[in-house]
Amino acid sequence: MRTTFVFFLLLIILSFVGSQNYNGQFKGKDIAAQTDTAFSIKDFDGNSYQVVTIGEQKWISSNLATSHYRNGKLIPEAKTIREWKNFCREKQGCWCYYNYDSVIGAKYGKLYNWYAVVDSVNRIAPKGFEVPSDKDFSILFINDVSQLKSTQGWLQYVSKNSYGKKIKLDGNGTNKSGFNALPGGFLISNGTFRNMGSESYWWTTTEIFYPYAGSYSISSNSYSLYMHQSSQWMGYYVRCLEE
Image (cartoon, rainbow, N blue to C red; front, side, top):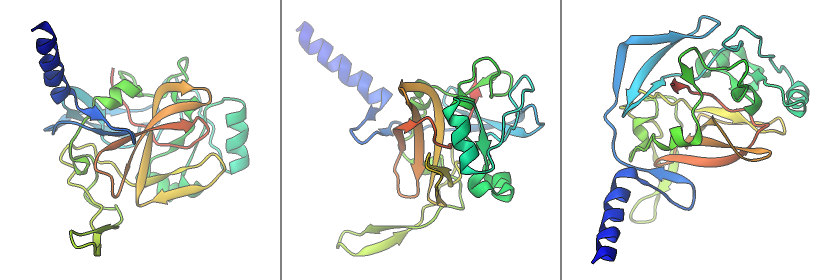
């Protein structure tokens, strides 16, 4: 009798918290998000970020764009892949624009290496906020990832209909959550910029095992968030949530 009770209790718990399947894709319940229009924050550079409430979490609704830590210390810009690799070898935080193009950066934010994200002395997140851990991101369970994606900018993707015929589908989302994920691409540690228009990655503070850390991504054709183990030399975007 006790065994049966425990079994049904586990089923109830799992139905609420969502699940992680073997390819690292997270699925969970629909979350009705609310934008708090009276709530915005600024980083050291004066960049303003609207804050949205998703479930019980408060997230900034755009990628971080600061070139300074919270205390005013400069985060060095890498203007070439050689500079990027040198900063990473020294385990020093740095950032760059996608394709080293400030026009692109004005729309999508800055790409950071993992060392900038986890600098606990200087801290990259604006006051009162923090870079999410793997656990923080895993709470962001949403059945339909389109609720996290922006309503424009995502490329179409190819799928097959019930007859096996290839068709093109819209990669854009509804942004029901207000998270407004943009397809900003990312920087591979070998110096290649990839997948603008079809994918975006964000860092977590969680180190998996050296030299890998946790990250999450969304793509044009994904149905939910994907979890990854990424080289700490990669260039990803950063989102922050309230402490």
